[in-house]
Length: 169
Length: 169
DNA sequence: CGTCAGCGTTAGGCAGACTAACGAAAGGAC
DNA sequence: GTCCTTTCGTTAGTCTGCCTAACGCTGACG
Image (cartoon, rainbow over all chains, first blue to last red):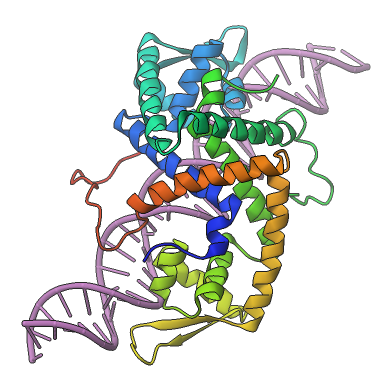
């Protein structure tokens, strides 16, 4: 009944995708149960660890696009989990800070995600889980440093005269 | 400079996602260079290994939704890489078969994907790559068997009666 | 022969990733 | 101080992948 072609089953990039899709789905499901999404968690966690920050800084740290961040912050502040106030030192900026309610929510989500992790990686032994984390970390670190996401400092002007987008899409 | 919160950097599900997103992007880019997409490859490979099949069988084996498969097959047949003809034995079905041109394309894509794999997993030693494949295979096999994709026999009824989810956007 | 299930197809929703552009404000050069 | 450029938050819109719903047709079964 089940299962496809040899080539597909052993294609490493595909395996990676399939595993990730499944994990993503589980995470999304669980977070939805708490009325949150991945980005909400990312923002709350980042604010908690780094303290108040402007939206663009948040965008850099969470890898959420500035344009999409707006909606996320709207939702979070609608629930009183963050506060957004103009920065007196620079009126272009908003200073975003996490609230007590936000910390409570963050704590809830932390536990939730730990449970999902346990569930998703249940078929692996603790040693294997650690192994997997190591391998993935190597990969992510490697390309994370050379292919910075929407980098604002290095890019921006490289739109050559040809206008061509190097990454066709 | 770089990099976000500890909690995010060490979250296993997130690492998995990030690695997969990167791999996916590379794959998509390269395939685009050959005028193909992932699904095209999946279909061609499956046809090549299993021989002619109906669309719904293809859908099962490739995990491409029947609705989306239509467009993929249109494109492939537009390029002469597959042939689609009504099954004389059951007029509801189309029999899809790969052509010689399709096999050539498949071969091209195989090489292309091998190169991408090499590139994406370059930071890992061969032993580590094998390890990763093993770990991912365990994960995929495990949930692949209990959470059949768009399973048609055992529907899911989880969409509550409450109607839509008015996600503001 | 009538009902039901399976097939291919069309249409559409929704979310995530990403680009473009804009008004407001800041910073620097002169 | 006046230009010019950059940064910031924001809105709008595109594109793709994932997924549901429904339709018309055909075959299977009682």
